[in-house]
Length: 350
Ligand code: PEP
Ligand code: MN
Image (cartoon, rainbow, N blue to C red; front, side, top):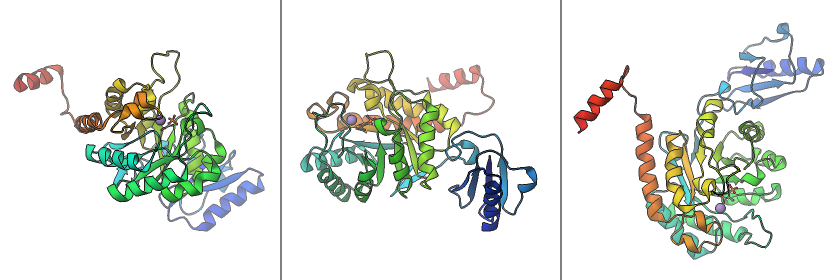
């Protein structure tokens, strides 16, 4: 069961609940609710006569297993990185190369995606490659270039971490920590980034169900790190026509299940450059808070994921269209509106 304590609850309320649970041999824990209050989560239930105390704002005997990620306990979350608000009114664009390949190329790309309108620079320094013989990334050298690109452009940076032992190093340089699809279920890694007080972008496992994905987010939230951004990056389907299938249904679904912001990755979600633009825009139309996209000035020459990397001109177009779509989606239509009213509006426009 879940007992919600608001910010006014004295410490004695949570202590009494934990003591009561302990006396009944039921494991219990408290977690910050992200609004100054506490959530007391008990495996099993306490009898009604023990459920009192100042500051108790709600008691839930039935709830989703992802307590902290659930929409039941919180309305929309906004993750703030510098001046950028992920989950706010504007779609946020994170763009850059798949891998950081060198200082000059990263700086050139950073300025180009900035000029195209991107908000955050992406780039991998530690790369999870399917083959051990493929380029594995520049490691810390790449992180240094990323920090230099941030300094020059003012853009916050996001980069991937693959192992718990790398977290401190990556967190020293990155503004947002990326957990890749192959690590969505790396629980030691999730616990470790849960200890950070820094935003984490959690990609969906390529074969993970939505509830499994939200439970992985819960690992991070349960550590007290409430700054989690979800990223739908495509799932495996039966059809080899595309590399993955961007699951756009997951976007409104996640919206109905959680308060966490969600972005879409149309690059890995398709694996095909010519499909990236349409799927990025469709992601925004589906309600995503932003896009996460591979872009650089010479896409064909990228060492990794060249086939799905777009150039800055295309990025600029995606950003402009995404903003228009987001504005259109935010419009409140006059109520009640019937088909004839719409036809009249169209006739006037003609
Ligand atoms: C990436 O963003 O470059 C990446 C490796 O993504 P994913 O984990 O979705 O494959
Ligand atoms: Mn990639």
